[in-house]
Length: 172
Length: 71
Ligand SMILES: [Cu+2]
Image (cartoon, rainbow over all chains, first blue to last red; front, top):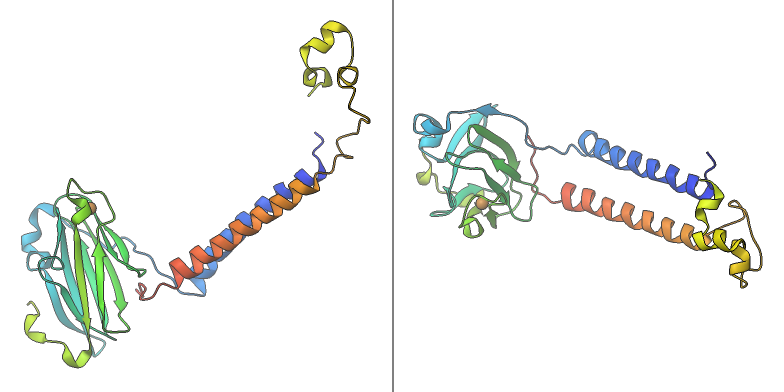
């Protein structure tokens, strides 16, 4: 079969483009150290009461001699608990690990304007660790259609300076 | 593809070839003499736009949008 040389050229170019896409993704995960959510744990969505999700909120933990925070969040139609009724308050420049699950349907947990974004799947626990560099407020939006009031499902993360972090609101 | 298929059916009926039906055509060229540099330019431009948008989307929107997941 005879193919015109221009056509041969842009067929080759499309393979170069695909190789370029794959190379950038490999570069991102190897050199830039990008992370995405993996499978962390499974859980019985009917019995969250018996787990740390039964008493959701911010917990203080010590890992490797450092004070860190764990945030257990339930995503429910159509709110984050905590997050919607009261904001999630965490200190800046500290490691914060979010554990997110859903007792009802699929939701999203997207910290708007950042790379923090995960699905909240019934029966699965999403885990992500981050450090908020500055004290400011972040919005959380649900980015998986979860029912008729999906569009109003939102929450707030309040990042406060370490010195102003009030430990009396921590859960045990 | 056989060449007769690319000809309009009426040219076969009348017995005339395609050029006689299109007196404006001055010269017939082979496939390799046909050199669409305009199409080539547009294709290169398109590839360049796709590549630049990918770089923007991946490194800035996805990679550079701190705070990120660190673990
Ligand atoms: Cu939703």
